[in-house]
Length: 600
Image 1: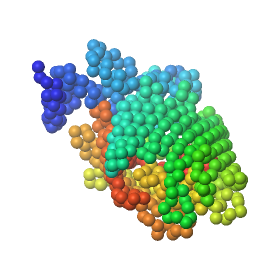
Image 2 (image 1 turned 180 degrees about the vertical axis):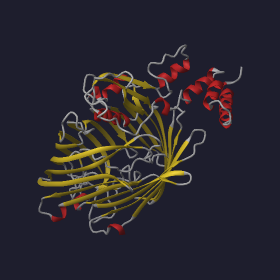
Image 3 (image 1 turned 30 degrees about the vertical axis):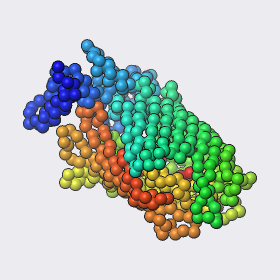
Image 4 (image 1 turned 45 degrees about the vertical axis):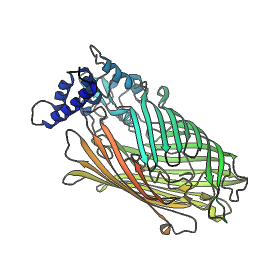
């Protein structure tokens, strides 16, 4: 009997041969399926790689919203939920003569439960039809990692004069995702399961090894989303990095996930121990010290809709939110001339007006998938106090956001200003400006293209250099993630650019969407001229690969190069950690009150 490895090799060679024969009438994937049926091993391989049907056929996406007028005054009689697994099988499909490979693939991926989908729906049976609730439910489901496509529609064939039936179709995404990254002497492996037991919960495990320094990094987290349909998310996380710094975090929150949300709140408890650099005025080489921190963060708020009539769309809200923070150092150096490691307590309240709408777009970051882009405006006032080093500092701040679609594309901008009312004029004011702009799709000869531009300007004050918690740095995930967080300053400027292409032609049903990313950043101290400080740069390339006939139908590969990384000035090459959708696009959502530039 032929060796199994030889059979597998022959299977792939025959698949390629079939794919070359495009001129033939029969479907290429049908030919491959027919060939795979000849042996159990090849049938398993086919079942594990190829879908039963294209994902766009399983669930058709649309970029228009349901009309309120069409079904005005009717009531929802029935809600039918249909889930489809990544292999293309519907929840009601009965697989006759189930084989071992069917059992294996079914148990390797947990199908999303109908109850999990139902928990995300903002409408119920017996309620009057509300088009906004149907769209918001679809948008919320679309943001979940374990879902590939979703479509919520009204079944005209079964609806009556006074009632309607709603059909919810959900296509699962493959939820078990291995991870591989490489940067310098560091290699990382991990796995993420985004749909444990079909509940939509997430388990994340990551291990990295530095072969040069013989150091290890370990991270593990479990996140429970939308617990019992309450829209409350909870997470427990543990981390130990290459330098034996430790962090344990537990949080639970319910944010203002929709303009329809009335109440929200959350809390975070965190412990971490790490070694950091201690600023000393008379020394250029800062000594390393160890700190231990326990922090608590509790907040809650309520939204009042501006329009609450049943038949009117709610886009505007007035939000009232309160927040309490406690940040305590349990272990810190005895000598700390700048009180860099100083415990603090704060209380803030905010009142704001938020007007937010969404436009369903395609080919922003993902190929041929609906993406919800927020537009509107908001104004927010914040007031409170900060108690640190036996001193109470009153605080006031204001922020404003605006986003809009124009003839030249889409842009949003957010400006924040905050001031402490104390005796020291140097420590009073902070300012931050964030913006994002992307062009309309333009046609090149071989691809559709879109350009992205995103600046960030943060102006702090000397206390941002003399406080550990509210330092300004460049190490954020959307900026320079390989940078040491101890590379700090009081002001920064980051300019980002991205070129996204969607190639017109496909190859064997593979669609390629290459992209180029680049960023330049400056970080300065109070007496520095920002643009005359060290220039930090990065450049990256990547590609998104899509194939609607494959179970693993979306793959992203990227390479990023950092010419000079502080503090050793060495170049760093990073593999597969850069993503094309990390630009800081403002969602215009109701925000928790905060001090401008604290810890960001």
